[in-house]
Amino acid sequence: MLTEEKEDYLKAILSHDGINTYVSNKAISQFLNIKPPSVTEMLGRLEKEGYVETKPYKGVKLSSVGFRYTLDIIKRHRLIELFLIEVLGYTWEEVHAEAEVLEHRVSPLFVDRLDALLHYPETCPHGGIIPRDGVYEELYRTSLLAFNEGDTVTIRRVRDKTELLVYLSSKAMSIGDVVTIKRKDEINKVLEIQNKQDTVILSYSNAAVIFGERQED
Image (cartoon, rainbow, N blue to C red; front, top):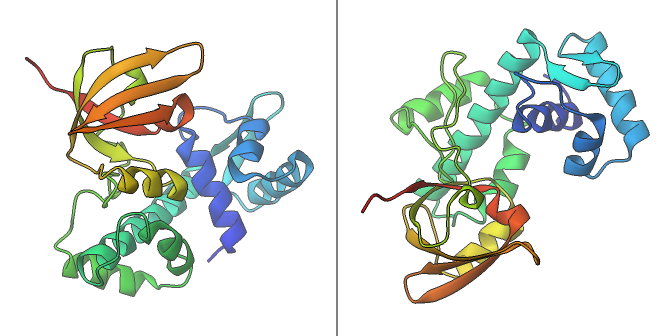
């Protein structure tokens, strides 16, 4: 099993579609908040170990071995999140940090038993797909930024960002809620949405990691 740090790099690459395209070192650096020279050094190690492929001036992508390994990490993380909520009563903003710790410390046997206990779920508490048989494609990929003012949207997935989840919980907003896009402020880069009786203000960067389906009239 790789170190926690290396696994975090692999997840970061996959989160930037690093199976289909090359991801820049800058994007990885900003995502993980790690200095560029350290990123370059770590990617070099991962390439030597066969988990990634790098190309000058383009960046890095996962190798087939790296992709399969990363899917195992994602599966472990998301099953643990679901277990923590359904069995131990965690809230959805609490589970991510806990799962980040546990995902590096459980065995494949534990994951298989957990999967069976939870009846082989399709998605995690945040709406993310749980990978199976080497297949990984999120069910919901249209971010709130893609919708127009006046659209009614069902929230289907939120990327794991603890601060964002805490904020959404403070607004009583969760998966399955139906919201209305009230205003898109291109100058200040904020999105205003209506959720029940509450108005929720999102930065464009946060709105970009909340995904939904438009409700037809």
